Image 1 (cartoon, rainbow, N blue to C red):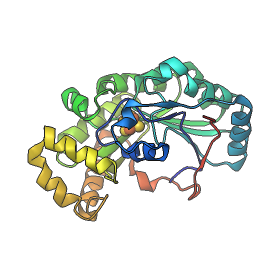
Image 2: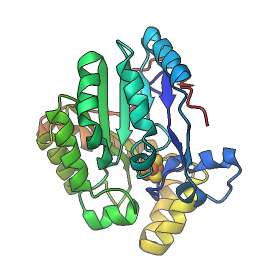
Image 3: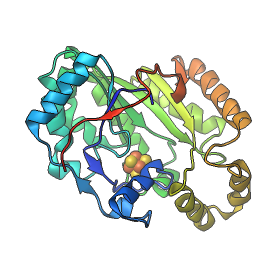
Image 4: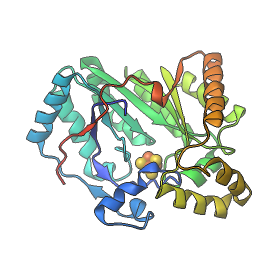
Length: 281
Ligand code: SF4
């Protein structure tokens, strides 16, 4: 993974995206029903001193700290518990920290001022995960995530606060969001909202997610099931030929929109073994 440290203030995620790859992580908590991932969210308790100690270690290592690699740090529960906010406040005290945040939430704009400060003191990027501008499709795919247009507004707010923002088209969903028009509209909107870069990644269907996603397809898009069965017949990854075709499409459309694009796997690799920051729970 292209980062050295990870911090996930919550386990489980209320936004309930049908394709969420992190559903399996609830199995470690003894929840074998993948739906529990979005119904029971665990809030980690922050221990300020150990958090600061680990952030200092992360800063000294020079490696990137990725916030929100498994669950969304700005999911609705953050509005009440503010664990992400406290983590960022601790990060403000640690010079030279390299930080990357990934979210689908507009709640991130609540912290625009704080994020602007962090950007001035160290390295920070905020990555907005947006897979379509089609509000109805987004509601079906990501039932409790904010509307895509509102996410682009939040991107604009952060860019205005001096924060580097990026568009993450993750995942690209075969036959649902991989079309030329959809990708073009996302890249154009990101450019207009001040994004510095776009990254994409084709859907990954690991066990836990696979069952949930196919049940969703059978209910909402039954005509697509045979093609998905073909694409994912050999496991969690789509065939290399399909992935290459989508990467080329995103690269071409990104260049036309006027900014660089890259695959997720093209990100510089800091270390092969991410470490989890201490958020006691
Ligand atoms: S917002 Fe992210 S973590 Fe939450 S359900 Fe969607 S994909 Fe999973």
